[in-house]
Image 1 (tube, helix red, strand yellow):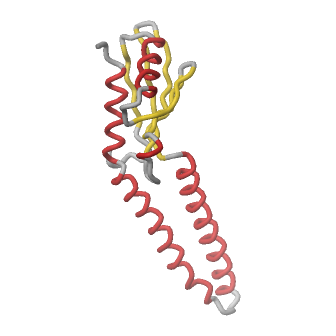
Image 2 (cartoon, one colour; image 1 turned 180 degrees about the horizontal axis):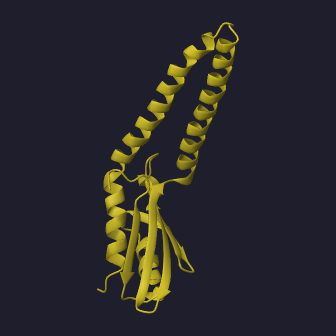
Image 3 (tube, one colour; image 1 turned 120 degrees about the horizontal axis):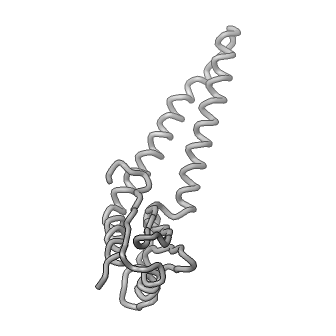
Length: 160
């Protein structure tokens, strides 16, 4: 679990699709719980309620499919989509800068010109490492919430 960027959950339940959707709906609509979200037509989104949310709060994206022998619950626990998009953007931007600066510097070097721009490569690599470390810190900070969401899926899949 520690090495997963976006942990996955897959459970086969004896309950019907409607029963599971009802359990999820009842849970997220009750006032005394940790999670909020929505469920509709075989799909559910569950995360912490607004007053308990922070930057690293994970979100459970759950697909509910009826099978011959029960119901399959498949889900991905990951960061909020805006946080995920932000990290992808930062990594892409830094990768692009690294490519452009490397090409520019090595072309200048091969032409015998001044290639001082190559000194920016360690700076960019430091920024990439910083973004990576901040993502790992965020994963550690949300470890309990990820475990809570996994337990939530297991709990709703069982008969009471």
